[in-house]
Length: 387
View (spheres, rainbow, N blue to C red):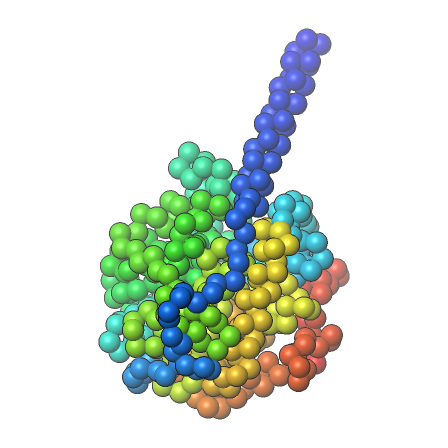
């Protein structure tokens, strides 16, 4: 009997410690400061009112490699307007039963003068064993956040293996742009030791919030940048990566403090790689659909502001197509994959992608009701129709 009492006390003590740790993590993740829209630095002139004057983009190519998949709660992607904000978003994410596999894709840019550039690096094979990979001793309490991840490598191989299919060795990668520092975007950074890794200063300075630094911090070459260049369309500031306006980084805070999207000028047209500023193309209407936001209401409002800026830029630049790496629907898995198969975007391919976008939104940019994602209980998966 005494042994049972001792065991019961022990169980209660363990539960109390777990609750205390959980509360500490929640408090840190949701703590101030919250992200806010980025305004242009004083004295900086615009690049142009609506579109960049591109440098010599001859020979520029962009491939999209689907290197992995990760499991996400349905609410994380689609219920930001239904209470998935602040601490509630993290609790609900841990408890929700409905989840699905979302693609993880890496954009590969070949620049004729600056070499190979990766936009994010996806998930590593080590991360497919989260309890083995994420160490509290090495990464602190953030390890517990990422231990709940479900990851798997694509049948086509991991990032390095798929790059080899394009004739690119790991040592050929000269630059990596990280849209943000979440694990499904930084997983393979350390496999490219010759690369300079670029990330916004706001993102770098807030890395302790949810990042697992052992995955990326040991990289030897970092460029922590500010948005010191001028406006581009609806964006008040930008960062011209190579100084030739072929690759422009645009501030889109909200998903994280210093999230960036990447505009890539090609021989024909341009592409905007959205990172997690858009989980799906359908998120382009932030009044109809929003992802979760662990910063709370202010973070959600900032996220919506960033999406409105992306939508305005796309609306005023008909040559621009949106690349949405996590989108689990046809726009990404079928149409974008096909359009970028050769690394180029012809006029016909751009028109096809814009046509797919037009099916989802009305003339005012509102998401059509028939295109709204929903959870299919019988099939146990997320579905979304094309009107």
